[in-house]
Length: 281
Image (cartoon, rainbow, N blue to C red; front, side):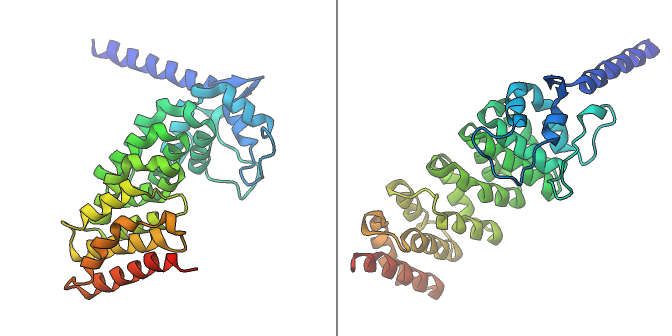
């Protein structure tokens, strides 16, 4: 019985290898051959090169290959015709190419979200977990629940990557704003500072909902957390017209002028000046 099981396992492995080896194709070329034609450094004109159309035609059939590329530094031996051979010596690595191809597939790559999330949460090396986060961002707003997981349950370095790619969601990022604020007032300084940077991005979420969430966080934040919240208000107001100012934060900022921590009071003062001087011509 033992040998029967071993033989069955071997046959299954051969079948899987054969399936990977044949791989998806379009107009007589495999997915990897099409992918290897793409110069990711070139500007995209119109609908892009023929390889773009081929990638979209192959669609979700490419997901197993891309997951293999993004999860392994070396090409699987069972997939000789699915090896990424970039056209230029300065082309992206196989892992980077996989992330960019996920971005090219956009929302069509939704079925890959659970596995990319698992990879991002577990891969120890920066290139792979960061490119998995990049791929999730490229898939679009269907990945926002995954970003919430990364920001709430991920290691600090994974949270940092998530904050790095989050601005790409634009105003849709409001869906994960509670998680961002938890990072902002958290104990990891690098993640917290990166959370502040998020509010400095032009595409960062602004408005009454965010202002309210930040002011509420002031009540339970540490001194560092309060200082960072005041910095967020400063960045949210910097060079913005009066209509875009976080006016609802003014009472909290005025109260923070009496904060016993000088960093908090000084940062609150800067934010108030930035908000209130926006009225001046």
